[in-house]
Image 1 (cartoon, rainbow, N blue to C red):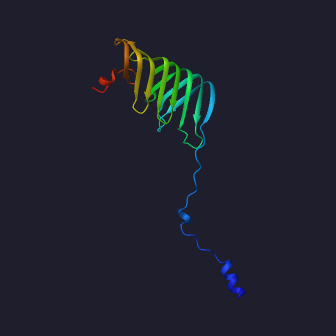
Image 2: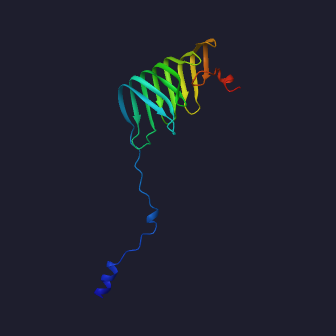
Image 3: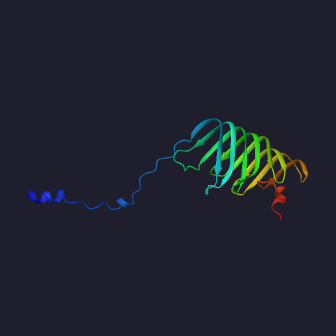
Length: 178
């Protein structure tokens, strides 16, 4: 009888049914980490690592959730300047009092005393607020928009859309037309 009891206890136990289907519990995402920054630059790229825009700043804050992918970062900056890329070349340069960059959405937002310039064609666009969508490759200039350049001068317009190099500038209604 003692022998039978030992054989039953020492043998290999069969696997528990459904054990291989169990997955470890995911921890809830922690709060975003916020870092205060003083004078620097931030580079934003798309998922293929093609450059979208680069922001130089006097001060700012960057935030990132620790468990999120590296591309889920965002920042708010003061005293900004920088460039918007088209392919690997600089399409236009900008400056503004404040700026925000979001890696995940690929959006650059500039506010207060916004100036965007391009070299070819030579053009300057000024506005209250500018939103650049890196996925659509589209600049939206909003509020008191003024465009000067070799092409013409347009003044006090509510909203204009443009390509990153400012070669095509039009009202939202006219922008999509050939």
